[in-house]
Amino acid sequence: MLLKRVAHVNLSVDDVEAARRFYGELLGLAPAPRPPDAGRAGCWFRLGELELHVSLESGADNPRSKRHVAFETDSLDELRARLAAADVPLEEGRPIAGLRRFFARDPSGNRLEFCEWSEPLPA
Image (cartoon, rainbow, N blue to C red):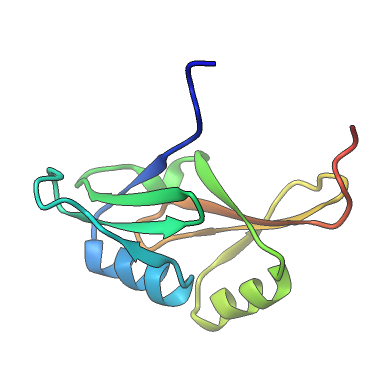
């Protein structure tokens, strides 16, 4: 196979410092090294083997988009409470058998899914 893995996901934001606080402080993602010549302003985070790259892009129409990144967790209720306590608006997702989930938007309007499997996927 030519492709090995997803190396990173990039999200466009209009405020890098608000994104740094949301992903780093609120969600607890670890900062990842970012080369000084990476181009536009932004910050990077590491989650397991995957990196989340956040890049400054003015004019992105994130608040109206359905595109999203999904983060799996083993403590969905705790994460939901943490986001609600930070006044992050939450949306319920369409029910999927065996999957508990909800959606939120980061400070720049990027849609994020948070999910926890309550049953194993059927084979």
